Image (cartoon, one colour):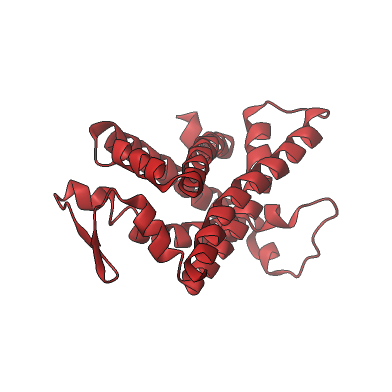
Length: 228
């Protein structure tokens, strides 16, 4: 199958899965902002998602998208390193007009994935997974809360300055990853040309900035709220 047997095919798969993940991030950021407006409304969303069959199915599809994106990224990185051979050990100056993010997408991706694991242990593991295991209550610090009380989890974790700092690092890495990844994915799919390339790059910067600012705003908002 040419999608798997060619670098262009693998890059196309990585681009499509990347756009799919960006759509999820937009939903996630919007959902998080709701917690600032109304914690009750946020908990209603958590309850609607929860361990219902459609949410579980969506989670499995999302996990598949992540795994496919990561697998293609590793595959292409190893392929590129093999093609460069000994040249990769040479000291190079970044070529003019080549973004820093474009040269460090793999490292940025590793940071994003590493902190994603932390995020899953904080939220998904104690919420949806706990419900799937039949737990109607979970321990959160010194309190016992419902797995559907998402606002309690946000208040608890974002009251810790070190956790907040790690999440802000995560958002920064995600910003760099998205500023290059989105327009590059559009270009790979073929929705770009000489005129639209610069436009897509600008759209990528705006999208990444709004997305990461939304995540950061919620994180900092609840940290400030915890110390007031």
